[in-house]
Image (cartoon, rainbow, N blue to C red; front, side, top):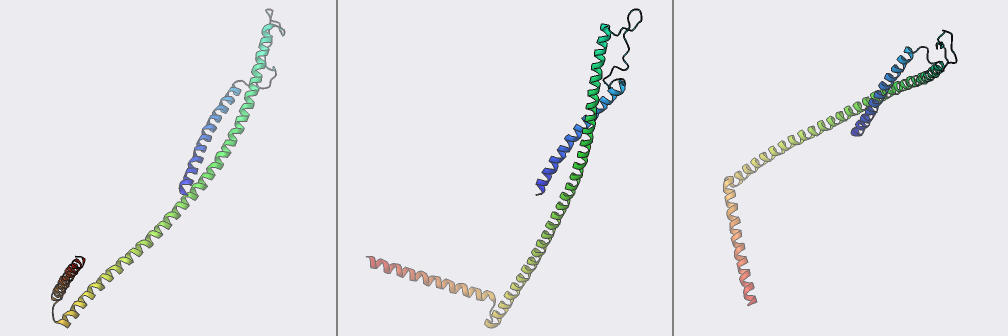
Length: 206
């Protein structure tokens, strides 16, 4: 669950970085257009206001000359371009504002998501620590019980040896030796019985 949340957070963070880069580029373009408009204050209306009239060699106004008509066309084209640039600048400004609003909301969501992930991680660590502490306490109790049982076994062995010693008036080593001898005698008798049985079966098959 935490891994999936971290993956989502990384994806959102990459998106925020891309939006930030786009916002920076748009702001630079908007600033460039603004400077262009400021450097050409007479442009932007689409009219010919501010265009100097053409003059002939005598100094009179020549409103119908080819040079003046070319200048009028160039001025009109520049004015139209400037209007388009201003519209583009306004659109970019609005887009920048929308990007800024989107980034603000995204950062708020990231902070909220990161807070939830951090709180969830802390809670998981707290629960894990509680479980580990409980297991350690159980292991310690089992270890104490094992030591107690071992001590009881040692005490019981000591009591049994003392009881046997009092009843038989012999030591534990003597009792063990006697049991070993009896066991060996029983094994010998068993071997003899098996040998007799094998001999009997052999005679029966002859």
